[in-house]
Length: 166
Length: 166
DNA sequence: AGCCAAAAGGTTATAGTGTAACATATTGGT
DNA sequence: ACCAATATGTTACACTATAACCTTTTGGCT
Image (tube, rainbow over all chains, first blue to last red; front, side, top):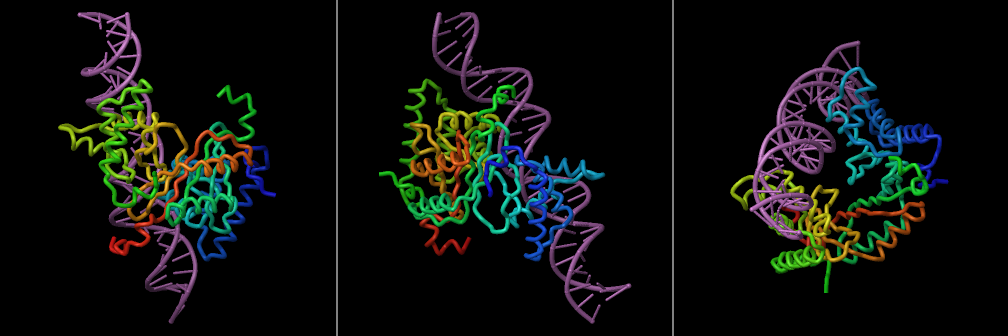
């Protein structure tokens, strides 16, 4: 069962990464788009943690994994592709990117972001989506997309005495 | 009566500006903080329209209203003050700022942003706020703030044939 | 296989957004 | 009038993102 808070607790993160890569390959294959080695590499780097990563951080990681440096357009183009295919999301409040755990259908995503451990958890709550649409409709707006980013403390960090040591 | 969609229709916008300035002066006075002339000028510029404005746009407007140019820190410090006092909000998805129509109590704000006319309408919907808190609580998160930005078409632009001419 | 057009990636330069650090000026209380 | 606190000015720079142009790779075609 999918529990959003999983990202905040101990888990075998290798599974997250490999699942994401397998899903991405299948999805791109079905859609007839090309998950090139660069794009796959960027996707894998994005998935290195459940913390959103900035484009320049990813660029440095790419550079270290390679023999030469990588320029911004290279990583931004890969990110654009991954965004386009719904394999990653952009967190506006952080200027950062995070892997999507359920990319098979495009969806509106919502995020819970822990201010302490920096983990971002994706929610996909149909009822909340409906509520947002309703609220917009009350004002006569037609919705094409939305961005909901909730900041706070994840369960682990609420009870974690170590957070005072930061 | 306050109707969010007002910003999208014709209205005497001078009232919006003067109301905002009057409210800001009173609020700052009550709080014992200083609404300096620079800060008030930036607030007035932010209120020039219901479209969020970028910091550099505001900087240029300040420069044109003055005899000399203004540097980024000057406008960012004024914006920081106005944000701190809840007199303006930042729209993360646009890197832009907009006046708050109800600054007297601090609140979580939600925005409807028209992709066509660029107007951003602020909502303050207690029920929606509650829903967001509930959704976060289901995942064990405690909420400290959130950012909800809904993009779409405002009532006027949905029926406006001119939008095809853009 | 070899050709070709389309897609992807490389490279350089630059635009747009935001802040650090330090100097000067202004304010308000004593 | 003086002083400390606050606000603003100034310079330089960091971070985020894209434009423009060139080269390489890919996959369909004869």
